[in-house]
Structures are given as structure tokens and as C-alpha cells.
Image 1 (cartoon, one colour):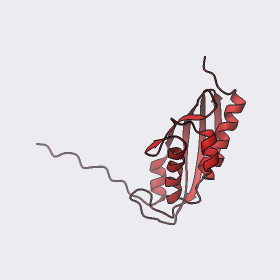
Image 2 (spheres, one colour; image 1 turned 135 degrees about the vertical axis):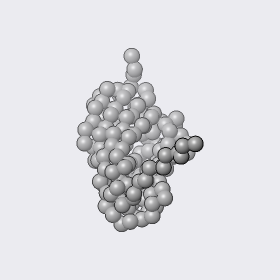
Image 3 (cartoon, helix red, strand yellow; image 1 turned 90 degrees about the vertical axis):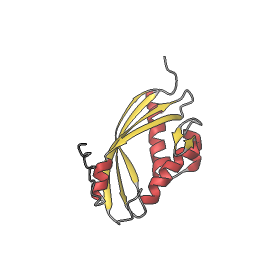
Image 4 (cartoon, rainbow, N blue to C red; image 1 turned 45 degrees about the vertical axis):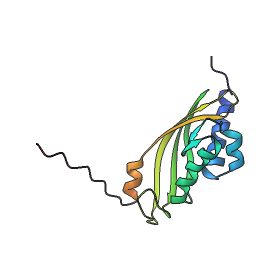
Length: 146
């Protein structure tokens, strides 16, 4: 049987993570809430997790996540969220458009025995986000018979 926080405590941890780390770029909270082995941007641990959100925030400086639904079955927590922001910096190859976007996603988190975020795996409506930025996605041409 997995140990860790009870469902109420797990929900509090994850809501705090989204508010303080995702929305407010709080390095102290990242250190408190993220386990050393949690994968992030080009590394592991609180700094790498925070770096992923800083990278996204460079493209959307006012990016904010809102929890739509949360299901806790420690050590697992699932969050359905919506995000809004204004495209003011490069998002991959897409130059700033100044457009506001709204998209949704879900994140699946695993807490360690100390109640820290040990893993985060997210899916989101990236195609919808790109459409809102005016990006045209063209599928590759099929190979010529040969």
C-alpha cells in the first residue's frame, strides 16, 4: 500500500503547487513542494520544474492556470485545468502575436512519501492554442510512389 499524504492533504499540496509554482513562479515553494527527482526542463528537481514554467511564461507572461477539477487518490492526483494568457514572447518558432489564448489540459501528478511532487505528466490542447495564435499546420506531403 502506498504511503503519503491523505487525499485532503494531497489536494492542498497540488493546489499550492499550481498556484505558487505554475502561476507565481515562486522558487521557495518549488523547493518545498517538488522532489529532487521530479522531471522538468532539461533536468530534474525544483529548479528544472520551475524552469519549464518560466520558459512557458516567457511566451505568455500573464499565463494563469485555474483548477477545473481535481481527483485525489494518493499517491496519485489528477487535475483538469484551464489556462489563459497573452502571447508576448516566442513560443517555439512562433513569434509574439499579442493574441490572448485560452486552452485546457490535464495533469497527472505522483506524490512521494514526504508529500512532494515526484512526477508530473500533462496533456493539453496544443493544437487549439496554435490555432488561436493563427498558426497554420500543414501535414507533410505523402511520399511519391517509387
